[in-house]
Amino acid sequence: MKTIMYVFIVALGTLACQQEKKIGYVDNGTVINQYQEKRDVEDKFQAREEAFTKRADSISKAFQLEVQQTQIDARKASQKKAQELIQGLQQKQQMLQQQMQFEQQQLSQAFQTEIDSLIIKVKTFVRNYGKDNGYTYILGTSDAAASVLYGTDENNLTQIILDALNAAYQKQ
Image 1 (cartoon, rainbow, N blue to C red):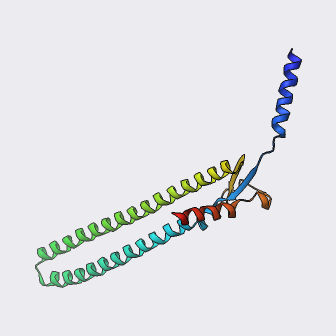
Image 2 (cartoon, rainbow, N blue to C red):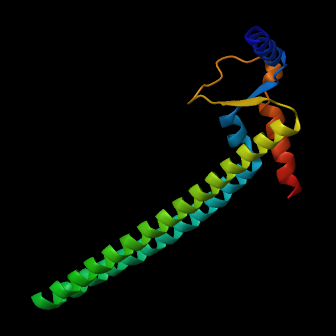
């Protein structure tokens, strides 16, 4: 009885090992960096960054004019009044710096949130592609984390996945 059970387990194991596994891999960096939606997100945030920079420069120039005027006024005023003017200016400078820093952080966080969402979208797409096309595994690799050290060209799904992702994005 034990022998029959042992033979059955060995036969089942051999049969499982003989099943053909379909394995592919993608270059994560290429897929993400050449994905049109990511490029569009980067362009959108680049435009927002440029608008922020222009506004910050404008505020800075206006503040510099105010500093110059305050220095002129402080020279004409009493020492106490001059000190009050300079303290007010310092407080305003600090407030402006905090406001600009806060807005910069908000912009960075919004960008990172969109990129994180995009990465999840790509992973989900690759997972669904693998299921729909009968893959047992789809591995990911990149220059930073090379989990695939060698793969044949026919197993490289990078361009196929990228084309499918861009096609799906264009339909939206």
